[in-house]
Image (cartoon, rainbow, N blue to C red):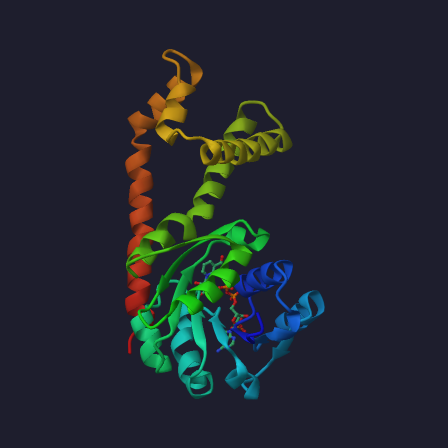
Length: 271
Ligand SMILES: NC(=O)c1ccc[n+]([C@@H]2O[C@H](COP(=O)([O-])OP(=O)(O)OC[C@H]3O[C@@H](n4cnc5c(N)ncnc54)[C@H](OP(=O)(O)O)[C@@H]3O)[C@@H](O)[C@H]2O)c1
């Protein structure tokens, strides 16, 4: 790939993408970052060898792809500021909530893809939902796939509204897993394990069960029933969870995230 790629914003998600792209063989000389923070620029240059800029300049007009990796609340003003210099580029936004209708109106450009990644992107094990506007052709899609694959897996969505569901499931999902790990570790300690023992057991259980589910042809309810013999320990735990209504509680939590993603689209997308 010989297209120049410019990141607007050089924070967590940009760093994860840049490190993954370099691991996948992208040329560091073709990646540039527009980032106002001096420390962030120094870190990106020393760790990854990419060129960083503190302010806009001619490099923007040479970009084949512009990746918007800034907070939703900064999005509108940044796009309007850089609109004139980025007309020829394909645009990829990783900002939660901000809809492509808003982005296209701010940029005056229709070649826009939105991605919703998650934090395991930092170690190349993320998963991203992708949505492309109609003007994005198959070459553009391939280019985006190469970039996003550097952070892990991806899947294309037919409708942009599905991105809010992706946000509620896999976007925020790592925090749900960490929350369960925290609770299992605390309980393990109260049952007599050391913190280190409980931590090791909890992490290995999530990783192992996740890998088992990924590699199995059986759905999770069958895998669960297989380890839940009547009258046994797992049966006691799952019955307690069912009585407490944990499934509807988790569903309500995910709908809260879903509502918030929709609200953010309204809040930060006013045209
Ligand atoms: N982290 C994740 O796992 C994750 C997952 C899914 C989606 N996202 C999305 O990714 C986006 C970025 O998240 P993040 O965690 O990477 O945030 P972050 O670490 O705060 O990085 C954003 C960076 O952009 C800089 N910035 C702000 N305004 C700018 C402008 N006009 N031009 C250039 N740079 C600007 C910020 O500088 P200052 O700090 O000086 O303002 C900051 O260094 C968000 O929209 C978020 O919704 C993140």
